[in-house]
Length: 388
Length: 85
Image (cartoon, rainbow over all chains, first blue to last red; front, side, top):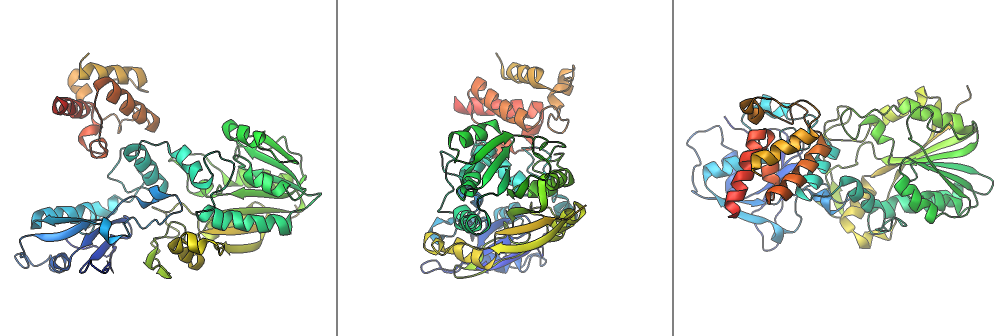
């Protein structure tokens, strides 16, 4: 017997010229389908065989797509916003039921449905839902035939990898915050380690204050760009960050600030199954190179709202949170996981800020601006290395 | 070279494990479940077979149950080749 699982929400999506449209979204599988009122009526009575078999043809709309292909920090709600972009279908009852099942709006077997929530076993695994990274990698490789690694860098940085995009949330939130952070907190005579520096943009920003900055990254390709674009006061080193002894070339107690961005999450929710990443090894190395009372500062995807769907009106958004401590889709560790690791590694958290977008961004992307203003997409955590 | 020979050649070259010697077992072999190739190997397989067999796999074909056994993979390619004629 088919039924609508409680994981499904129904949203009104009527617009001038497009009446009678509803969106059914399974908030756990991140799948959706546009429904007409007659389909809503049908799925309201699935347990009544023979009832509501008319009309003979039902209207629904294909509107789902992998919306993060528009940008890593774009709307992750997985449906087309413009009513005109919804593809109308007229389906018979059986075809419609098949369609509803394909989008997990209805299911036949709850046990089989629940068994789908797990890591994808391989790139072609369509049965398991997988986490965001797995879905994202699968989509880019199979549908777009694009290397996720190169696509990823293009989300944050311009094509020449020498600037942060100002027209998305990376620029509006991260870069805007770090400009102020560098101005207010970093200065001459300070030594800074930028771990996972990539092409060195943040290293250069910190060095612009007169600080001595050591950028460290495992990628020679990125380091080559960093060195060719290096600001005065920067030095770039290659190291397999996170491996024991990776920072061995940096002296004990030599850094005032160690900085990381968008990297800690991979130590909690591995990028691929079986990835070896021990956050305590990393934090132990960071603590060793910090001066007494030195600060470890980190900007990471928000523990709650990162990749949460952007629902509701543009200027009055809401969202639905489906998980926190039991991660199946999410790749962002809860606050408690991060704080526990810091505490166990000899740090005390001294500051936590939830970062919002700069004002200029409201006219660039109103939906992204209002969502990120209400539901922060990144968090800033500062911690101090405690004495032994 | 036949489609089966192209597929056999690819797996002989890239497989991390010994291939079944028996043809029936080879065709039934579920190369992903058995860990014959990893994600990088999947990409190499798609590129190589598309190029050598002159076909293009759609996302639906790549994610189909049929695609996950060697015999099924050969059937998908044969179907695409005949459809292209």
